[in-house]
Image 1 (cartoon, rainbow, N blue to C red):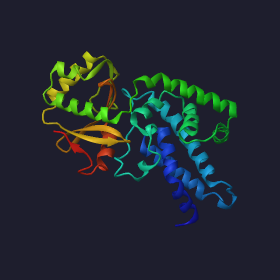
Image 2: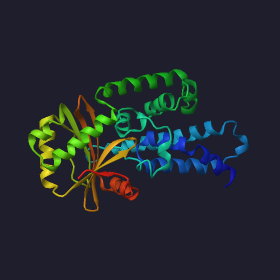
Image 3: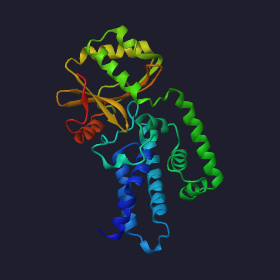
Image 4: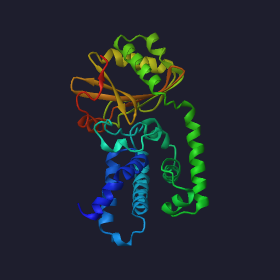
Length: 297
């Protein structure tokens, strides 16, 4: 392995973790890393006083440019956009890196509240532990401007956090109850699962059938899943782990229909997210081997 590649591989996991949190899709993160690797190969290594800082700077700026373009594209996305999961951690070497709440799909969705500049400053400072001065240098802004971006980001994220619960045991219990309710669906059994102000978000990307806007309220969610339960006879449910948090795969035969994750509080589901976009599911299915999840049917 040549010196540049060896250097890059040494820092690859950290760089991927940063790019993925910035962009919310593994493929985009890999593209950013490929571009960073090309730039490193074109650079004279002898001139790098701090190779890691140089790589983090290049990766951050490339991810920022790509995120700005993605934000513009997502404005025309059909229905809600949800982040794309990493492969289950047993299948993806990069997921062992910096495992934390900041990698969960619910947190990645929360990050969508931020502008690209706020997202970069927040991640560098709060997740990757760079000082305001170090983050400012990476972003080519003043230290005061960096502090302001981080402050705004924290404020925006706090506004969304009251509904955000990372109690994995509670999530697993509720997912199991959800499966039981879906196997013999009734309005009462489904309604009992949801908080009064629960929200359902589904990403079909205009390709798969999905709700085109978030649905709110226990009654509406219960009626939606009652209809789905009746229409999806023979569906198989599997408990899985996506981005370090409990999730549910819904399959019919060899087809992965959706990947579902939830937020909860007081033993009720406060938010349920259903990823139904065939492209995103196909990439997830391609790296999900038999035995990676637990059948609940």
